[in-house]
Length: 112
Image 1 (cartoon, rainbow, N blue to C red):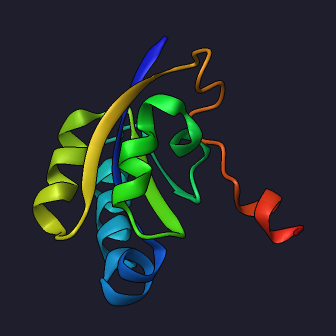
Image 2: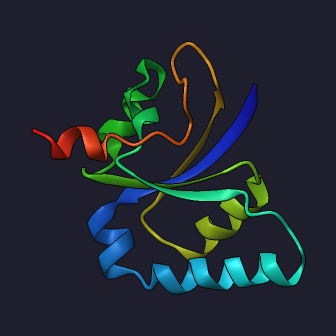
């Protein structure tokens, strides 16, 4: 089992109101320059929010949500310092509640 850390926000805030693409590009460039493997992912409508233990987190975040998920807690802390109005936390996966830490509900919801 792996511990995943996340920054969570509304899609409108993170993807439209913040210069977030620049932040990710900067971090990607940093990882590449230091020969580090990418350990962060952007997930729209993250499925992990459906876990019963994370319902209170889901209720606090305007929907639709987006998360940056990472195995690197320092990266998540760095993001938290750069952004406002985000929630942070962590979860272990795979587990009975969360089988795929990077799963998205976006394709499921777009079919409806």
